[in-house]
Image (cartoon, rainbow, N blue to C red):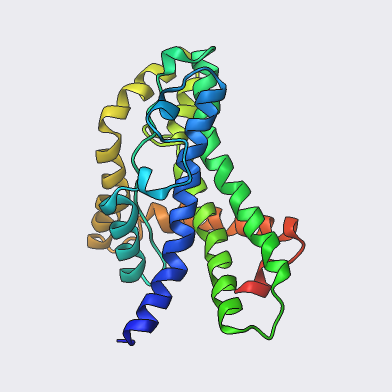
Length: 235
């Protein structure tokens, strides 16, 4: 076990980009809803860069960090306080719901690209502060892409589920929308129950390892290429 300063340093490298990724993700939902006719999030103070307005102490901080520590950085699952949106107040509820839902992952993709660009300004040899900043930026790329990929899974209440409900024909959209009340339980079953069952049968049934991580790595390669550097330069 490292010293207290070493532990604090390591946690800060994770907590700072994670909170920023989640905060701007949620604020983007509220901002998109405001632009499309619903001011519910603004009236409740949720269009804010103050993370305290968005984080859930367990779901946003404790759970993701614990899972990352226990998995050696290989698995993360968490949630923030959902931004309230009165979809009936949107000017075009069905298509605007798609735009509001997509705004969060789109914001994460933008954050990842900006973080990758900022790495251009950091050249070795690195001082202590520069090294910390470089690690934060690198984790910002990873966390934002991981959140974008995870949230775009086509299962309500995730953003991808709401995008699917808005785009699919009614015959498919309605039963998918009805899943939202059970969505969290389904997610727990898929990401915890299914891997456990697979392990009992000697199989690897981890959706995280089979789908989320490969998609995140592919996007990471693309983001670094768009930023002007191959991702292998940053580990």
